[in-house]
Image (cartoon, rainbow, N blue to C red; front, side, top):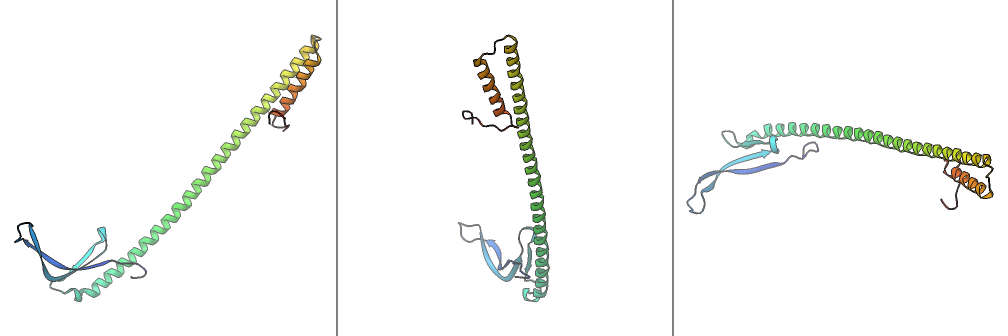
Length: 171
């Protein structure tokens, strides 16, 4: 651990590949007595090995490299965290805008429905009034016709969203 960043190290002994004496395998691996220290993953792999300069003598350089890698990783993690926070904020704004639009569409649909109901209720009232005037003109306004006119006006009042009248049968 360097500055709260975990760094994986792999220390192994180097081997040399030689042709096998066993007829079932093609190669044998013989230890060389040299060490290999590897750190990092994927494209960030760094490897040090014994050679003219022993691994022990390279330790200050190795530690410096690990500290730089840890600092770079810390900066990278912070960039990712800030990017993620920005993405979440943008996503919340998009969702809020989408919800506002959906709410607005729903309210508009309700307005459209209620205005159509109002228009139809007015149309019913005009029709009922025309039937009434026709019956009066023809001197045919019977009690049966008057009951129908009252019933039709009550249904128009029930259907009209501005009146909000209840109906025992239709509610």
